[in-house]
Length: 167
Picture (tube, rainbow, N blue to C red):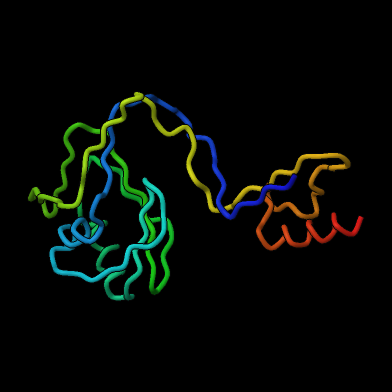
């Protein structure tokens, strides 16, 4: 049995249970109020607490600049950026969330406070390195020649599969 995925998980340090968290329900409204002007974006594939937009280079620059200019008790961190896409992390489990720009409070739209009935939290986060599990007879450890800093890069998975099929 071989299981391969382009998205893996890594443990979350300092795991604590919680009963709520803020999520972005309307990404267009959220970014419009952060930037302060009408915008046009396409929402890209991602999972909370990560968000991805597809748009143009000029608007991506405006979003990045707006994130640098606001202060908030939420956590906002840029993840990846190209000329046409932007991915960022947004998370807060505060009861009241605030955003300030130039020391003036701004009402940010598009957010929703979600309740967690099970009183749990995230004990793992998605990582772009992916996963590769093998189980069965005659399975050997992944040879170190395929690993780079203890990770198995996607382009080395093909080499590993071909090598294992030939033996």
